Amino acid sequence: MLIAQITDLHVSEPGSLVDAIVDPNSMLAAAVRFLDGLEPRPDAVVATGDLTDRGRLEEYAILRDLLAPLRVPLYLLPGNHDERAALLDAFPDHSYLPRDGRPLCWVVDDHPVRIVGVDTTEIDRHDGVLDDERIEWLDAVLRARPDAPTIVAMHHPPFDTGVWWMDCVGLRQREPFESVIRRHRQVRRVISGHVHRAVQTTWGDTLVSVAPSTAHQVGLDLCVGAAARITSEPPMLTLVEWDGDRIVNHTASFLTPEHVIDLPAVVPDWDGARDFFLARGPMPKTGSVLG
Image 1 (tube, rainbow, N blue to C red):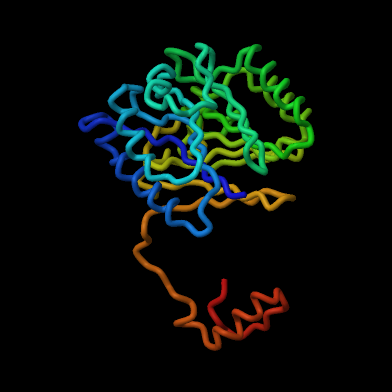
Image 2 (image 1 turned 45 degrees about the vertical axis):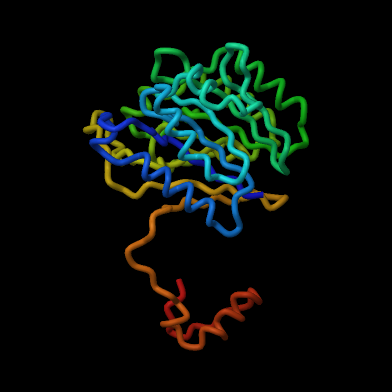
């Protein structure tokens, strides 16, 4: 199974603050085209929050139009820039989303990998919250299927990333969350966003990761108190592949690269090299440009 994670889309109306930095709408459109043309095509797409920049109904209408070309199941989580009510209004056909006024936590059991979405947002706050109710909900959901390989998705990373100003608006109550994940070894991955960078850590057998943004990235500076910066690094998304035993992660830019080298055009005896690759046998050194 191949799952695409997109995050921190920041879809906006013309003239918004984010528009002065990047064009998030065109970047998301490019990401959708990339995913739709990918071979193999992902089996599902999970969008882990900050779907819009200001949580306005008009932005969600744009978001829905931009995501409409996707021909695979799409699962949505809110981020701190989102508004739950507007999100629900814009996606009435997303039946996995609860509509009882509670946080938008959900479970999807329709795939070889179980996907659990945890809403870490709180009204009028930029930092993340996991109160006792949400922690107990997650624990019960994971207890229900202890043998099902599971991915847990959320917006706020459940660990300090080292980017100080983003960590200041990180997740509260992370220790109880970590305890739940460590108790349930079927959780193979925890995926998140919010920080606009690719970051990873591990909790026992579980990889916990942050995906980069489809819009703009946050500058990497691990000095506390360093200037907060947005950078022009490429917009990116993440592909999570489950092969029945393990999960393999790929981070990819979805824009057409300026320079591409076609190896068969520059490697002598490419057919022989290809055969070695396919056979997974020992590759003799030939002076070729082969990684």
